[in-house]
Length: 190
Image 1: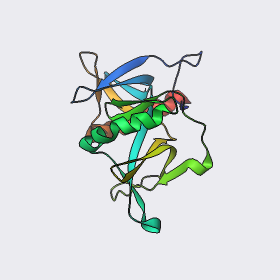
Image 2: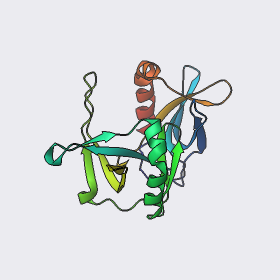
Image 3: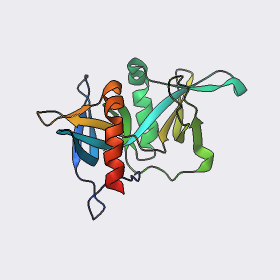
Image 4: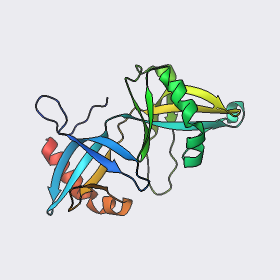
């Protein structure tokens, strides 16, 4: 799926898998790309087993048209069946998983003409544009939607709780431990 600079077993296999759970009871199966201990706390870098997808609604007219991310669970629930049917034509199975929608199956090869660059506006952070590959588009109730998959991997940082369960780091926790994690990761990669 995606390549990663982080450690894998000698035969190229991932170190194992772990399941993330969200507040609604949905799950997301992830490969453990890397694990490390910092100050007696174990952290893991996780990569979803299935490919993440994002659904956008096209709004506006012609040159003023813009893609708006669909992140409302009620809207996703209404269009989910149509998205499933459209991607099933490509032998992709859509899953409403924790933290991200995903698809199982082999993604089509990347074609330059099918790429979309998403400019992310955030006043607090200088974020790089995200490149997305178009998988399919469809109409639902006169609204055009497009399904994309990011070209860059979707990674999660989690800490392992005392019960052995992964707990996603909150943005505050991540900012707090980010320098330590980066130092340990880059030292081990070298």
